[in-house]
Length: 186
Image (tube, rainbow, N blue to C red; front, side, top):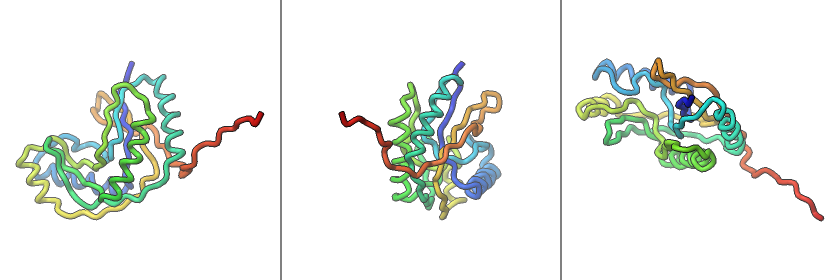
């Protein structure tokens, strides 16, 4: 049986706590909203697979991470999408660095029907009504956060709870050199 998984970047615990607090403040103002109970994250991709196939995918993720280097991320503004999403955005340099990381997984993980995210952002709320999006923009006006992106997190969707839960973390190897391939001279 296939299950749903997502590969994400988690900011620091301090930022995760702040995002949770912001979600609670917004809920107190506008009521329940999509992603209210979701742990803050930057989505890389989402896919469905079997538990058996998942082991091969984890091996691929480890290989990709071995070659990735840590990235300093600066989150410095709020933004929104036309679909009612309200989020914290990285500055331009951080966005470029995060996109490079995300693209490595998009290119290297050859998964059928993989949903790819190519716009790094840290979601506060999804599918807000226009008037609630205005309230979110009025409540939260300035932000200045930093964290080091040094790993990716694999999460599994729990159908009963309707939330993703962390099942594995993959540290970056900070080894951007390609693997040496031993050959013969003669």
